[in-house]
Amino acid sequence: MEASQGFVEAEALSPGQAAHYLRYVKEAKEATKNRDLEEAFKVFYLAKDIFPNEKLMSRIQKLQEALEEFADHEDDDFTDVCNSGLLLYPELQDQLFEHEDTAFLCSLYRVGRKGGILADDVGLGKTVQIINFLSGIFDASLVNHVLLIMPTSLINTWVKEFDKWTPGVRVKTFHSPSKDERIRNLSRIRQRNGVIITTYQRLINNW
Image 1: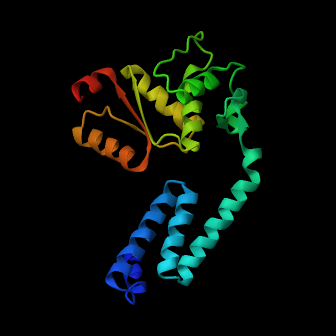
Image 2: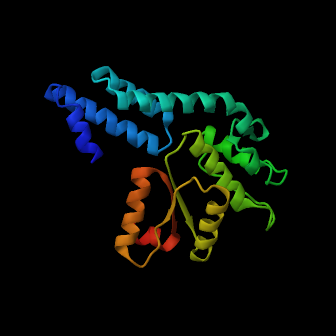
Image 3: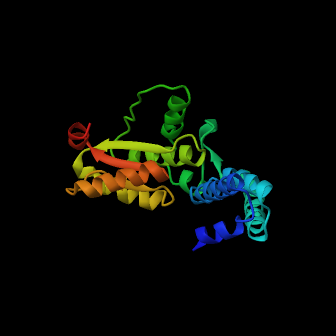
């Protein structure tokens, strides 16, 4: 319905202008769904330059207000983990033990090191620290997709921990006996960003 309304709105434009207008609106909506408000604001403005209208201006106004509100509270809403540059919500950071593992992971990522080991004792929160690290780099738009590989026995635990600590991060598994479901989950992560979890054997079988 909304797409057809877009065609009606743009029918007074030339075919080329209408195509650009509708493409910009579609891209801006997709950026909004992915929480990339700055990109959505920029693309909606491109659409406005082609065909300004009341509905479009209303969306731009709402995005502008959301961006201004985020900027006003940006410093208060995040904590710099051990001065590493990795920003986490205080509610998450306050739950971690006084270790620098999350900052360590961030430092490896920033210098492009392709290997690191967390060797804490059992029960000190390695899973949670990795999840918080991933949450931080997702929020900073440093990464769009993450592949986690683990033993089958740990999959449910990791899914539950993601849901508990970072419910805003999309998480799917590539592990179902159903091939269609595995492919569907993988496609959703590739298209919409997030984390896909699989096992060593699934990785080997589906290389």
